[in-house]
Each structure stands twice: as C-alpha cells, then as structure tokens.
Image (cartoon, rainbow, N blue to C red):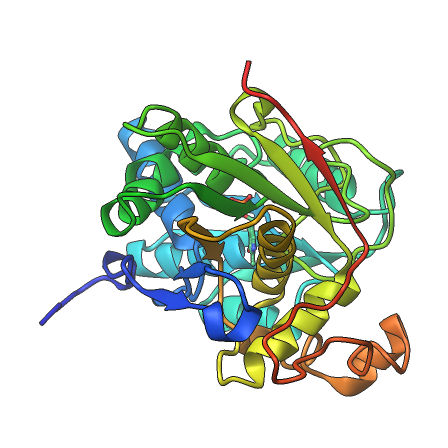
Amino acid sequence: MPVITAPYAFNEGHLFVDLKSICGQPLHLKCEGFNFAGSIKLKAANEMVESAERDGLLTPESILVESSSGNLGVALSMIAASKGYQFLCVTDSRCNLSTRLLMEALGSEVHVIADQDSNGGFLGTRIEYVRQLCASDERYVWLSQYTNAGNWRAHYRTTAPEIAQQFPDLDVVFIGAGTTGTLMGCARWFRQWHRPVRIVAVDSVGSVAFGGEPGRRMIPGLGMSMRPPLLDESVVDEVIRVEEADTIRMCHRMARRGFLFGGSTGTVVSGATDWLARNDARGLSAVAIAPDMGERYLDTVYQTNWLQDLYGDHVLTAEGLDTGTGEVESATRTSERRSRP
Ligand SMILES: Cc1ncc(COP(=O)(O)O)c(C=O)c1O
C-alpha cells in the first residue's frame, strides 16, 4: 500500500494498455497520467526542481517562473504548493481552461499570452515575456524546460527503464515531441541497451521542431514553433508528422472504447498505428507513450462545437472513425527515415 506525505512522491510507472483491439496493430500504450499532476510532466518538474535545490538556486523568497503549454505548469504548481515556493506560469491562449483553473486552484499565478510569434506559435512570445520578468526582479528563477538537462534526464532515469523492464524484446518505441525531453531521455537510454530499438519521434503537422512549414496547431503539448534546443537528431531514427484531424479521430476512437486520453496521445497513437500498418508489424514489440489523460480536453478535443469550428463538420464522420472492424483510417502523413550514424 503506497502511503505518501507529498503529492509529487507518487507516480504509476508500470501501467500499459494493449491497443490491439482498438487500433488493429500490436501496440502497447504506456500511461503517464496517473499521478497527482495528471501528466508525464511531473517527472521533468521533480527532476528540475530537485536539481535547482541541490545547486542552491532556490531560496524561500524565490518565485519559480516557467513557460508551459499547461502540463508542466500544473506539475510545478503542485510541487511549489507542497514545498512552499511561489510559482508563476506563462502560458498562451491554447492552454485548456481546466488546466489554467487547476494551476490557480493550486495557488499559482497564471499569465496568458495572446500574441503569436513569427512562426505562428506562441513560444517565442512566451519566452521573451519570461526573460523580461527575470530581468525585472532577481527573485524569479526560470527552470527553462527547453534547455534544462533535468528535463531529459528524468526520462533517462525512469521512463525508458520502466518500458524496458516490461518489454525486454522491444523493437520500436513511438514518442511525441514537444520540448523533446521525453524523446531525448528515452532515445539516449535505449541507445545503450542490449538490443537495437527503433526510435520514432511523433510530431504534429505545422510544428517546425524537425524542420518543415509552420502552420496552425490547436492541440497543446506536442509540436514546437522553434527547433527544440534539447533535440539531438542523431539518436532519432525516424520522424512522423500527424495531422490534427487524425489526432482527433484517434482520440475519439479510443474514447468510444472507454479510454479517454489527452490530445497528444491521439497524435502518438495515430502516428504509431499508421507506421505499424506500413511496416509489416507482425511479431514486432511496439510501445507508445501517453503523456496525459482526457479530462483536461473536454472543452476542446471532446467538444463538438470546438471540433466543427476548427476542423469542419465531418472531422468525426470521415472515413475510418471506429468502424468496429479495428481497421485503420487512411490519413495524410509524412514520414522521414533516418539511418543511424
Ligand atoms: C500532453 C503533452 N504531450 C506531450 C508533451 C511533450 O513532452 P516533451 O516536452 O517531453 O517533449 C507534453 C509536454 O508538455 C505534454 O504536456
């Protein structure tokens, strides 16, 4: 029986969903939403705060500040509340309402940025805002998830070994890319493992993380409007880009079977399903990572008006949405293969 005194001390690291009957491919989904912050970002937040504490960067007067599309902000709000720090989250207008309310309920201040940067995203504007805050008052401490090595080390220490322990014959792992903390930590760990594992990064169409044209992206978590500073492409074998309409369809396909996951999980599972269908997956051991659960997306991904306004009336009636056959819809995706250096 786990008994804890601090909310950041618990994380379910060994829960996997077998998606074969839902997506028609041999795919296991590692669920990272079962902790008090509700997402995979608890791991990065813990690691970054603990390393700042070890380095003596945090004092009782410190005000933690971070740019976050939401989940890291919730995790830092929870840790800050528990440890007695103040926390200010700089987010943008794509942040889910429930995520913002959660941060405020945990006692954090939230500043919402509405001005887009030159790539049509908000990241550049958010980061500039944080820089100005830090220049204005020395009590601000910016952990900077985009550059902080603790972000990828958390996954090197925990996420990758948790997968390896359950899947000793793993062949391929699908990992969504935002800051690329999860991707880099897992890719580096598997590079040193006893067998080769294909590392497939999943990005959203419109993200410029791996190059490509910038475009509208409405689902928070995955994708970047700049190149992620943590990204080292030499440890990534392949990149898949998924259209948001396909993300939405996969989220609803899983929800119809009782699994309510967050938007980026739909992206990763959609990309993985398509990859496995194209690559003769028979006999392959494949895992994808689900960063969070679906409740935070009830007013977006799971709300009919929001979907119709952004993606058109037919986004959920298009060919292939859970026909009950387990077959996969055809989708517009691009994929780049990389060979290991
Ligand atoms: C829901 C969700 N999915 C995916 C990601 C991407 O993870 P990472 O920043 O480790 O690349 C995040 C990060 O915030 C997220 O909140």
